[in-house]
Length: 218
Length: 290
Image: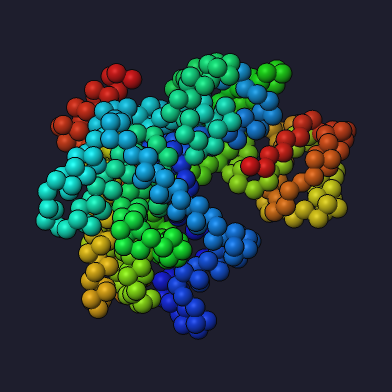
């Protein structure tokens, strides 16, 4: 937490968790999709489901999906912007197990056909946590440059990624590894102190055994 | 990051620097930016506060219909009648209501330290800037002072209503504003932290009981008590009055009170004003229509 978390963020009201955090979840989800969303099913859990409407959480999520940031004054009118920008959406309520009270699940489809499911929570003060991507556990705040590599669970992939980062003088801040089963589908989430060059991301994408690479810096 | 207000004051003494400079240095280290970048960002924050105050819309109502229009009523009252508490304090009251209402109506504000408490700091700083000083650089310095106080409170206690009740939001905002105002009025470092301590003490135990869980009732009007309490605490400190309990221990007490506060009184929209028959009726009406 720095002093601009205390005096700030500059945001559209009324709630840093239910409005600003929700915009950010939408915004980061759009970046994770790496496509322009055209369809979104938004499922609210907990306090998001019960008091979300009065806080504009629904309009906030849509604003974020349209690429707006938490201080964008168009947030209250995001539904009409969605219509203009051809984003169709649907809201639902869900009850999730072991989830933070302010949690939402986004099922998105992009213009070029990409799909992604994101589960995220709003932690307060406008800060968020991405909890799941396509059902696989991950935990990152998207406050730092973040690299997400989906790969087959086999020896050597972690070394490939980390040696590339070392070669580019990129320092790793945090690193997490997840897999669905031994030898199955694995995900590594790496937060870094420096930005990762675009050509390095491209290089990673072409390696054998690497299924998908997502890089966000926002 | 400073663990205590005492640590900030000691550093000011050993390095012979002002309170605000020490906080800026810390920001420069924490975020790895230049002093100029840090300063510019704080100036942007101030501009955003001024703009938010200027963008108040007297006609706007929140989507629940519970918030809106009171700030304009107060403004009209102080224009037409000699206010008992003087025109400056009258303006502080109007400003706090207006910013609280703007927030409820989904307008752009500066969370300070939270969106629910966003009216406290600008309620004091905007009229101070417009009527008394017109020195933006000095206001920016005061914002650093406020941020330094708020950061210690966030670290030792909390600035979240869900965690510590309203005392953690409006109480913290009030402490920050009291410190800032004391600095603006020429108070020394000790007076700054004692003003903050007195402001926080006076709001100890304040619960977070929003009707229907919305940042409207009683949040908008709580900004008024936060702001007015900040002015009176700053005035006491400037008069040479000290908090008998050391400032850092006041913050620790706030944490303890927050920990002991029942969950129904921590932003769950269940207890206190939210739990009154009238509050419950409003909740039912809103959720029936949504």
